[in-house]
Length: 133
Image (cartoon, rainbow, N blue to C red; front, side, top):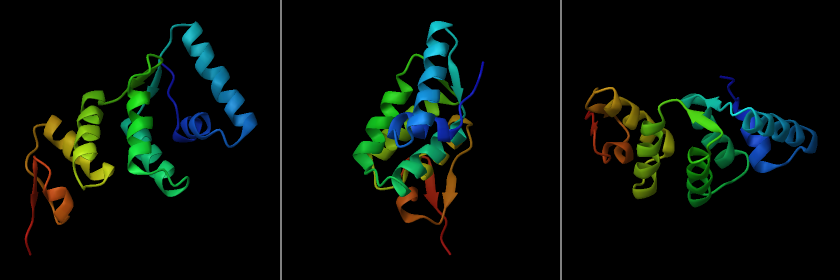
């Protein structure tokens, strides 16, 4: 199964480079035609969220919408998909950032609890605990 880098997803979503957008569309169309899903590592999703937010100024609702749509795309297969879904739910409900939500969801999935943190926002998420000084 072939895999995607963050920059391919960014070009496909943001459409800021016509040549790279066309190449990304061809790759995805070929994948669909061959019934061959494209693998998306969890680290790519984490970087994608950061790039959309920091470089393209996507707000929380926009990020949630984009990531939710990607997770439901049949042509994509995600590493740790269940943890990504949980992270999106945690991010939607709380004040912690997406990275912290994903870290906690992955730790919980691995049975590694609590997730110790100095981050007061992250510590409010079920499965995490604030490490006091």
